[in-house]
Image (cartoon, rainbow, N blue to C red; front, side, top):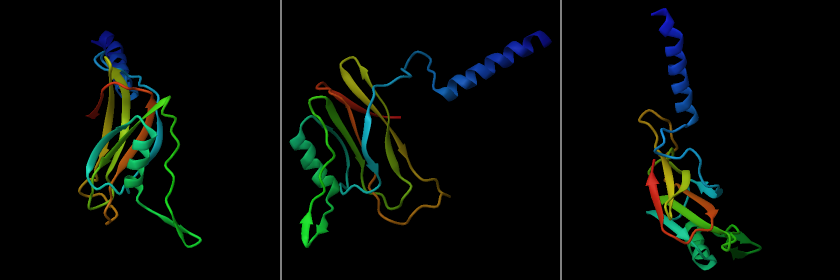
Length: 160
């Protein structure tokens, strides 16, 4: 029995480290496509859950105005904040809103972006507060927006 103890412990330890570091069993990829976060937060002005893909500046700017819907007053004039710059010849924008929530502590983030065949698959991670968590008592509307390498094929959003 002593001869099995060390190899067994090495196997268990290796398995645990693999789980923590995100190694997979071959059914999913550990690596993902590169992306950049454009914006992420808790205060979208879009009150319903949405999953959007933007291939053009016009559609992106129109959605950004709806999402941002906050105007600044500068020298007595209303100024609309400009949307972040995106080079649509090189990038595609993915945007997710999860709708209105009655408290803080809710969030959405992109966990992985990769291909399945010709489909771009964006995996989302949702966070909600636990029953004993202290949260702000304010309406929130969490969102996440990223830019990925240009993709003109189908896109699917998955939950993690």
